Length: 69
Image (cartoon, rainbow, N blue to C red; front, side):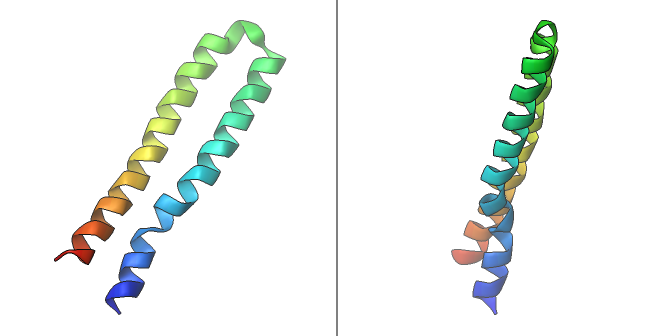
């Protein structure tokens, strides 16, 4: 049962790459459409990527805590 709980905690870590890839692709499309707005788009992209990465790290840390307790 513990291994299932650890695997569930790692789901955000596994899906983080997919979410970041989709966000980056959408940002590149937006910059291609409006190059003058690239500064705003890149700042919003970095904020979104940081939040996505944070959720991945939180899931990984909880899984490590559960594994080594």
